[in-house]
Amino acid sequence: MTLTTKELKRKYLEFFKKRDHVIIESSSLIPDNDPTVLFTTAGMHPLVPFLLGQRHPLGNRLVNVQKCIRTGDIDEVGDNSHLTFFEMLGNWSLGDYFKKESINFSFEFLTKELNLDKKRLAVTCFKGDEFAPKDQEAYDIWRSLNIDEKKIAFLGKKDNWWGPAGETGPCGPDTEIFYWASDEEVPSVFRPEDKRWVEIWNNVFMQYNKNKDGSYSELKQKNVDTGLGVERVSMILQGKTNVYDIEVFKPIIKKIEEITNTIEDGDNSKSFKIISDHLRSAVMILGDERGVVPSNMDQGYILRRFIRRSLRHFRLLGLDLTKIDATVEVAKIIIELNKESYPLLKKREDFIISELRKEENKFQKTLDKGLREFDKMIMKDNQITSKEAFLLFQSYGFPIEMIEELAKERNVPIDIKGFNEEFLKHQELSRKGAEKRFKGGLSEASEITTKYHTATHILAEALRRVLKDENIKQKGSNITSERLRYDFNFDRKLTDEEKKLVEDEVNKIISLGLDVKREEMSLNEALNSGAQAEFGSKYPERVSVYSIGNYSKEICMGPHISNTNQLGKFRIKKEQSSAAGIRRIKAILE
Image 1: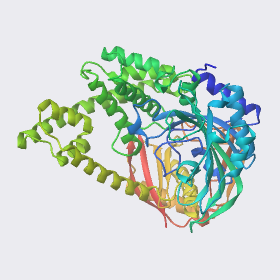
Image 2 (image 1 turned 30 degrees about the vertical axis):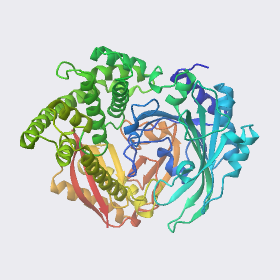
Image 3 (image 1 turned 90 degrees about the vertical axis):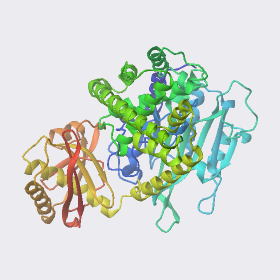
Image 4 (image 1 turned 180 degrees about the vertical axis):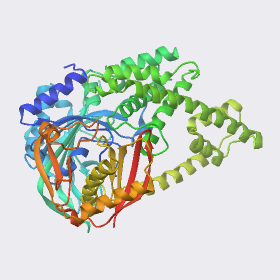
């Protein structure tokens, strides 16, 4: 069966809708109140409160197509299957069905709806360890579906276990489904390390809770979370062995050929793939409802890296970047290809193009400065040391391949081995910093983070009242166990007096001991009742609304405390600019 990505998504949603799943919207690429990741990497991110036991307004069977970005495999991009931006098909059971139904649904969809050959399927299951037993149940279900025992492999926690996302929380075994994507004969024995077996679906069974002492206990509410990669499955359905050959990439590749006056072939194929993937990711980030701009921090840094790496590969293809806004030309194609699934891309087209142009100009200036620095280095001692190479990489954004190319042009030696050692040290420091920063994880619905959620609602209303501006809306939020961070639209810096008035207002509401009440209602009812909503966010047809006495009312996924007197004293630590027309407040509870 040959299906386009659009047809595959429609088929999947219809299949699960017929099986009592409610379709939910794709969430933003920028996670809300989640310090563990920079981007939404799976459909389960927005559902964490409900995986932890909170009731979802739309029920306990859900399905969607979620836009995702993963940067862990960024260095793999350029091969036949890795992408940074991709779409994930997902279905969830929140305490409803479990392993048997989940595996049966997946098998039926693949073999009956998509007509995939059962003989080309293989699966992995969790082999067990000292904390959790071997997943014999999943194995037995696959055998009952006549999957050959030689096509089932048992693997350890690294491959067949999900979570917890932080130090504690829901976790459990998973079973992964693979498809033989080669034209060669299907082997009789499944060997997961053979790259011709492509992983297409992952069914996670959240049946345990990891406790603070490292032990595991059975969860009261057992959940299922599954993920099926749209582009990889489309590749299989379209009879391709390369994900960049499917219909969502071919027009992008063609445009790059046109701009560079170069035909894609085996030698330059990696550059074509990197440009296609990275600019697709950049456009989707810029065109997101919580779209960020290129910067040297967080999501903005990743976005900048995507754009500059694309420009680097345009140069490798021989393009003079001063002659054409290359990223803009490719972005227009990407917007056209995706505007039906994500209409906001078309609405934000001018913004996307403007930011890409700005970043191209900045890159050109940085490139010129870096080249001058490079000349100084070789004039000094006719070589590029490891420290000099790393300076060019870190301060001027020169990829190591580019430094190597320049050194080759000037016929000077370069210490690549030393650079790699410097780079590994840098990676290790970054990793430790990230671990410290993201400690706690998705699952952390601790008492303090719950308090910060409620304090954020009070802060939002206090800003509207003190600054006498009803149009102030949330533009972003991030909560950790150390502080809250709240972004809002306002066109100037707050005065010291205004900050003090906002602090006093929040503390006044805390001292009143107001009850925090949760209600479920339709989205229209919520908006008509005056509930605040985040600008640009998509909400389901039924939502949770939290009221803090008669003071504030807001659509929110929670969690929250029951009374404001549990919060303690509120204090603003910093107020600063986050972006043009956006202010950011960082505050703590004492």
